[in-house]
Length: 320
Image 1: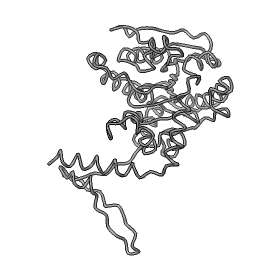
Image 2: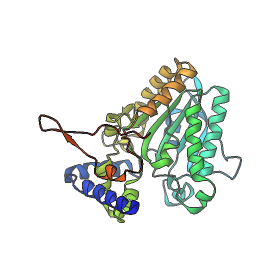
Image 3: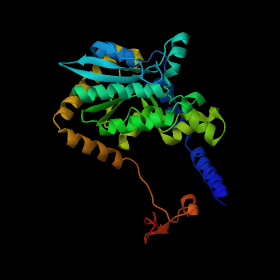
Image 4: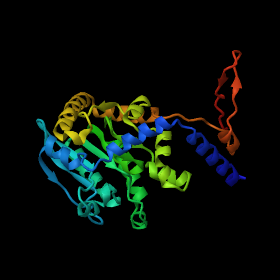
């Protein structure tokens, strides 16, 4: 019975997604292609333009180093900061070396190591997010991929120092969220942020990655939508044509927003920052409570009619 209900739910979901207007699908997909432009600035490009005296740290003190994550200490303005970000490669050799920006567990453990240093030294933490997702290979899972992602999120949630996350490119799946738990989340104008990559969603729903544009139109991962839903706090404008058209100008625009965010967060007490950070993530999203085992309600939620003929959502059902 449960399996049949699950299949019915997926069929209803795919039918609803397939009814999206063609123009919406095309617009969203164009944004995704723009954010994947091979000349778009990556983490190291922003580090070169925004920070000085960057000292990169390597290794997780457990298994090894992961080149898909760049982490270290740098000077920003009048003080020092910890910088952690995903790094994709430019040419074929570098892309393989960086694993196409898809970290393994040692990458996230390296990031947590740098977060620990920042906590001890009282340095703000800045993360730069740009990944199609964490590496899905069996070896990564054997080394604790899921645990590393969860531990990174927990670590960021508990930090006393200011934390700012910037989605500079693709922000897909838990691979992005592992570096995304912050006091302020900034997104570049053409960046995307989603629970899964469009290709991954299409492969699950239709077993056809070619339907990625349809999946992308359904979950609307663009910066404008993320701002509308409260997922991101600020949308940082990009130069005309995208960040790749003028990386120096893109860095300059981001610089102003980073300075203001750091200044505002530094004015808060550590306990207040932690409280506001937790509340921020509790506010995101919506949910509906169902009676225990009532899967049919999730698939076909009951709707009542108001006196004027309009439909209304059902009241919450709570379990004892």
